[in-house]
Amino acid sequence: MKKQLSFVLTLVFLLTFSVFGYTDNSKEVVELKEKGSINWSRGVVQAKGIGVPPPKMSRNSNARTVALTDAKLNAFCIILEIIKELRINGTTAVGDYAIQDPAIMSKIENMVKNAKVVKKEYLTDGTVKIEMEVNLRGGFAQLILPKDIKPLDSITLVTKNKTSSPVFTGLVVDAKGLGVRPVMVPRILDENNQEVYGSAFVSREYAVQQGMSGYARNLKEILNNQRVADHPLVVKGLKTSGPGRSEIVISNADASKLRSTSESLYFMKKCRVIIVVD
Image (cartoon, rainbow, N blue to C red):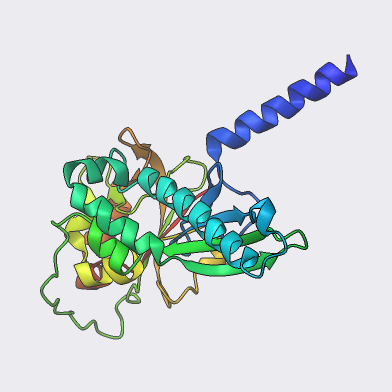
């Protein structure tokens, strides 16, 4: 009976883990995959590769080189599969996008081939273990971000007098408890389903270099984050919207605060936004 209970509890744990797929022991938002992960906080896809030298080459001086090459190829294939599942928005993944434009997948493959090796381990039996990662920002983002995200014209800030309320320097969306799924192109909506933040509000160069938003797990720790400091507007997410659970609804009152000042347009243009998730 005890063994059966233990098995059931273990099964429940594994099922729960696979449904949510996020680590619960890290300050960073890391989405776990079968053989790798997406670190949404750092903006990288990571995977581990293993290479084993052929038996006949176990004592050959080239054995380690062969094993390392195989390990890299192993990690390359895993990263590529994870990237195909990477969510651009709530309804579209990179793999879907690539079907429409096959040339994109070819360019992505070339980028993955140049993945950075962040860890390398040589075992006594000749096996090589490596960890590799690909940056989702920069060239990769330039490739897969929707073309309608364009450079925006400069925004003129209206200088406030000394008695005015402090100028907001960024936006923090507290979406804890909503089951939000991170995406490359997030949207913030008001209660009337009108967009408050999305691709139309950002300038492409900033979205490419740092992502449309940061993702974090601890609200207190990110209030002084350089991305939104020194005086971010903090709003509470009420619920998610859309099929992918990536669009976040905030109150009309908070939406009004964002729309009422030129400063908001300025920091949103520069993607000074962080979303706090579970």
